[in-house]
Length: 253
Image (cartoon, rainbow, N blue to C red; front, side, top):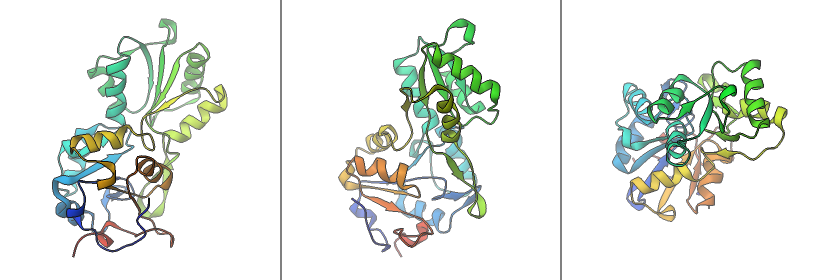
C-alpha cells in the first residue's frame, strides 16, 4: 500500500501523520528543505517515529525545537526510550549487559534496570548505537550470549544519514559484527520495521493504520513496517523511483 504521487497531502484526510527523523526532518543537524513548515502545518496530528538509539523522546524533542520545529515530547517516539520501556515492563528483575550511548544507559538506570558484569551472570544483552564499541565490547557480548543471555537490539539499521548525502554507522552494523561471532541466534529488535514504534504513535493519537500515513526515507524500515500494519507509506529519496524528494513537496500550498 504505497502512495505513488508527489501531490501535496490533504492533512484532513489522516488521523495521524507519522514521519521519520533522519533523512526526512533533518540531514545531520540541519532541517530538511520545507520540514519546519510541514511540521507546523501538520500540527498535533504529526508524530516523529525514529530509530534513534542514543537519546530518548524528551532529548530528541528538545533538539528538534532548537532547530525551529514546533514539536513537543509527546510527538516523539524513539527506539531508545521504547526499548527501555518494554524491558522495564517485562524483564525488570533480569541482569543486563548494556552496550550503547550514554543516553541509553541513563534511561536504563532511571528505569531501574540492573547493569551487571559477566561475573554476575547476564540474562539480557542490550545493544544500541555504541560510540565506544570495541573488540572488548564484542567479546563481552559474545560470551554473555554463549552463556545463554537473550539478545535485544534497539534497531537494526546498518547506516545513518548525515550531511551532504553521506552516511555513518548505525546499530545494525554493530549487530552484524556480533552475529558474525555468535551466529544467527534469536533476537528482538524494537525499532522499525517492528511494530512497536508505529503502534505507540497510533495509540497516542487514537488513530488507525488505514487512516494514517508514514513518511520515511528507508523502504526496509519505514516502508516495510508501516505496510505490514496496513498503513500507507510515502517514500522520500533522491531516487527517481521515490514518491517525493523532500517534505516541501508534500506540504499543502
